[in-house]
View 1 (cartoon, rainbow over the protein chains, first blue to last red):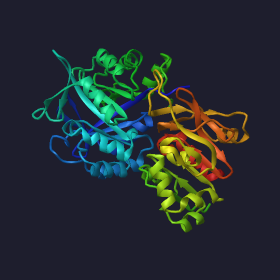
View 2 (tube, chains in turn green, yellow; view 1 turned 120 degrees about the vertical axis):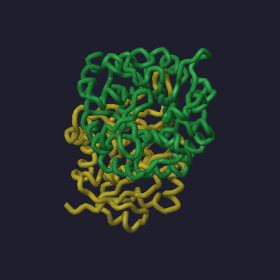
View 3 (tube, each protein chain N blue to C red; view 1 turned 180 degrees about the horizontal axis):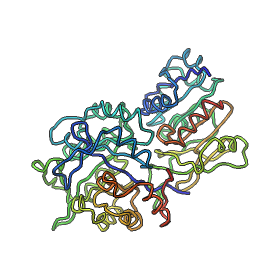
View 4 (tube, chains in turn green, brown; view 1 turned 45 degrees about the horizontal axis):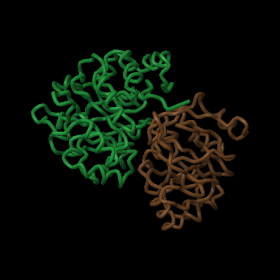
Length: 257
Length: 203
């Protein structure tokens, strides 16, 4: 047997509630964090990502009360993203029960932070999230994507940045392909195939899931370790048990819940 | 049954998650580094996340490196806690607790085999071993467990279950009153809960 491909619902958190938005805009409340976390756990999600989408642009760090509440009810791994910009905040988030911490804009502001966190906590819990967009000069990194008014180019090529974060101690990379995000027409297979060649650590695809077929494509064609999605799970359009049964029938290794 | 479960507070970040998992089983575990509290416990758990070198330094500073191997009650090592129970860790050339024989080594990266080994993998039981069969009966089949590690223990006579990531390694080991798991039962849903229940019940 071998490692299962992971199905990872991402819950965007804003002011302590799960929200959704299309292309990072117009957020609507989806529900309470613990209730949704438990529902996904019961459905057989392999891991959960809680992304505090307000944290980074507003220059504040995550509130850890909700992390402690999740830790009490959840028995699958979960990752907290958003607003972690210091060793002290990382320490508080991990102590509250998060298995991993994911950094995006703060790692771009201060790449040394990756080294500090990896040394202190081990690279296995350091995830680097990268928001990437196709431009004339190749795939480029975007920063502060949680807020359309603050979003800016990070002046880095996506694959150069992927190499750098691995050297600095990233244990996993989540590549969010912004052109595909929210439009449900499939993961950005070509970009992810290229990214796979630049990535020695686990790689998670993000952005574009709309059909069960898209999950099969991204696992089979881009060899990613996990696939992250939000709206198709929140809306109930794709049920995780059916998705896993279908992937299994396509000879893709998934965990039976 | 009157259980006094002590979680050795070795500084790993999964301690809170292990405590919460026990709480869901109705067990209020105490966090401690006090040799007297640990010795008096009905069950002892050594969790751990991080690197072997600093973790062993901490156990030595607390004088627990002598105490832990001498414990007579059921002891469960989790992840790094398991690795510390072996004789030696390749990581920083660290001398460990010596409960299990063998050296814990870095898992080799290969084509398509990413390190850290991170995610859900299936247990494979050592069917020739009666202890393995007994545990297998208490677990769901297949038993999927959540792993996060870059180092692993070799397969020996003390192995009850293996998992495979580029090659087989020990996922569960047992020696006398010592049980050890490379994966995180506290994060392995119902299969992990079954392992914790088995430890609390059958040991």
